[in-house]
Every structure is written in C-alpha cells, then in structure tokens.
Length: 247
Image (cartoon, rainbow, N blue to C red; front, side):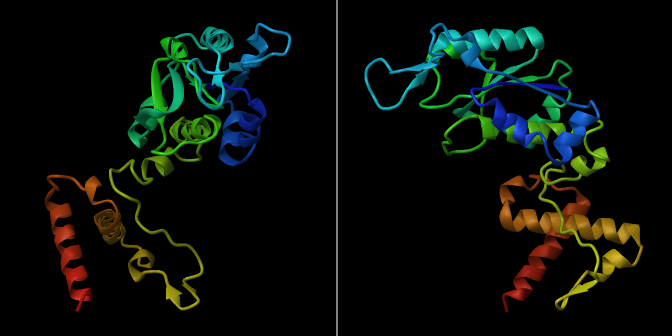
C-alpha cells in the first residue's frame, strides 16, 4: 500500500517510518512511503509557501499555488487515492476507518498543514478533512503518521499476524482485555490462574468478560445497545461483583 505525504517536513515522516513495524513493512514491500514538498512548487526564488492572511491576524497561511501543485503531483503518483487533509475541524478518525482505508488499493494521500493552516481554496483539491481529536498541533505530520500507523496494521505483510490487529482495542468494539507474560509472579502480583490452565473455552470467556469490564468502567458508550445472551450474562456478573466490592 502506498502512503504519500504532502509535507514541508519530509524528514519528520522518514524518521518516524524508519523504526519497528513500519520499517519492517517497508522492507517487506507491504507499504511504500513517499513525500512531496510544496516548496518544490513555489513560484518565487525564496521558495516561500506561506503569506499573511487577508483581513489581518497573527501567523501565516499556506498559499494555494504550491500546495495545490504538490497535491496534483501526489495524485499523479497515486491515481484515485483519497486526498486527506489533516485538520482539527475534520471528521474524527476512528478504528473502523483504519480498517476501511487498509483496503484502498490506490493508497492514501495526506496533506499536512502548518503555521496557521491552509488557504481555504486548497480544500477544493481535497476529498476529506480528518482530525485525531479536539486539540490543535503545530502541524499535520504527527496526526498523519498516527493514521498511517493505524492503517498499516491491517495491511497484509506488515504485522506478523493480522489477528494481532483484529484483536486490538476498538476492532472488537470493546477495549482490550488484560495481557500477561512470564514470570507468573512479579512483586506479589500473579498471572490469573485461568490463563494458565490450558482451557481455551474458559480463557475466551475470561477475556471477553475482562474486555466488557474495561469498557463498562472506562468507555460505557462503546457497549452494545443490545448485548447477546453471553454478554448480557457477563455484564450482570460484572455489575454484581462491582457492587459487592463497594461494601
């Protein structure tokens, strides 16, 4: 899968992609990462890409000419790929979108802003605005990298086992259950017996219950509106146990 970044800071993208799972994905040929710098399309000898806003105000605004030409160059390298502008005012990125975008055979194009943002006319060449939360950063590179990381996990050949991504928090619709490894006892804290007895049916039930419990306590908005018979039973057990612990 191809990821193209329209960015004034390509070194930031390349540095982040040169480690861990993303690096292995690149080396395996599962993902490709390319950067296009709008400065290369600037119309003056200073390679300027921003200017003062009309109407006054602090900061500088990214000019349409170099940004749009950079977007056009990116589209030429990945015809049909969605062009995504990173913007605090965009649609909030969710796990389901990561899974959907991982199936985009044409790739993804990220347009990363900086300074005080884009000239509004630039959005005419963008397919969607995406936000990673209700806060403002100095640039769009970090949010775009986070999205690439989330999407890459579902691209075949990036993770050792695709099941690792499918079992993650949010993919199942719930927060993830607790995980343990050796040693069995660490500073008085012991791995639950159910995970060591080899009974896979009991392990699956325990994991589901723990995922429901974490979601119930931390993100109740994610719980299913109409839980199936097993989930309803587990939720009742959780509520009874929590009520008992109060006394």
